[in-house]
Image (tube, rainbow, N blue to C red; front, side, top):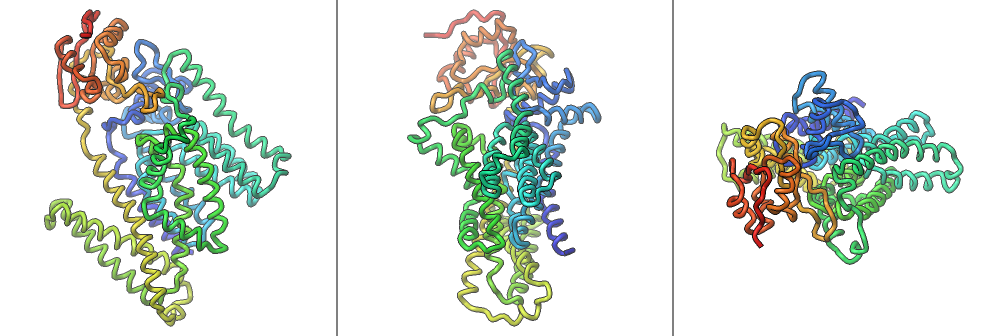
Length: 578
């Protein structure tokens, strides 16, 4: 239907527009992962395009070969550099294209599993997901992984239904690519195993095509990660694979923080606070047309939960919230089921039309006023009043979209029939309550998106420091830079290598973790060739008195608000005080 295509085109353009906001942002945030990907791409471009040997900047005096996921993403960025010159925007543009393709795949999955109303509401939830928007332009492998992960699930479900060799091949290749892009995507195999047993039964174990799928989709990842581990053993560099302990132990059952932290990340960044209510409503009142979507989504979430618990030391950390992106598709499908239930409430067609138009006008006026005020060419509001203008615009706009979805589903050739329906007060109150919950769900997403976009615009003080320090450090000089903590609160090792100072200053060198900072340790790095120490004040504060002792013992070359640049004598012969 042309109207249906128009609605999904609108949703696609909405998602594309929001995601485009950050495409042109330089790599100036202190994100370890982004700066690692950016530096690996730059090193491919400058040093060697050998795909199988990615190089990091915090390499010390070595060649910098590092253990990581299959580096096709930074390699593709480097290929763009080779074709069109070195422009940082290339990596974000590539991630942006991945995100647009992911939107399209989810639309197809939602339309395949849900009725029209539910598919549109699920797609709206997916499009407005703060987490999906965050990774849509991030220099991280999650964008490519998420695209191939979602494509694998969609194609696999279709293959089970239709036994198409085309879908079988797409699912196999997409699964292999998702595992290569991020080893954690391997949990998808648990979902596939459950779906196969549920639909085919125990006889699936006697089918060659099932065994071939499992082996062929896993083999590329096994070969790559075996090679990557050899790089770790030979050179000692890893992007959080072998140099960090991710796995849950017995303390999973004694330390409630693991479950609490995982639940907090899910609630705040995936489900949104009111989204749980909408999803539970959909599961409870599901119709025959949505039973398949409910069962697939719940099984999907069960497989994901197992994965979260296995790597609980990572999945519960605040910095690792992007690991939860895999929860978004099944959650969005359940939100769509809940929206479909709400859409079945019989309200007079005339009332729906009037409410849609009225809310649309409110959204347009409040959005226009708020936008003009933000640009400085309209009325000036206090911060609290401006916040309410944004809330009113967001709530009324999203309510308008939801009502438009319901109108679209009900219109068809039943205009007169709908106009004659009688209004029952209980039905009206129930519908109003459910629509309020649905709109609050979307509104919380919009608030988080606006907060993220605002936060991303704030300049990084460390980035400014790095630009200043880079002018004072000779080209080719090795630096020592502050890293993170050596161990997590439970005493297990973590990857402490902070990459941003190396990338911003365009220098190579060493990292030192917080607990190991001392004049003796710094002297040892000087013996290995480090000429300067870029010390973050926040990191130095982990050891009281260390900053003062460094100032008294080493030549201070430069200082900014958040960091210090020391020159390291060769060798440093000063001892720390007892």
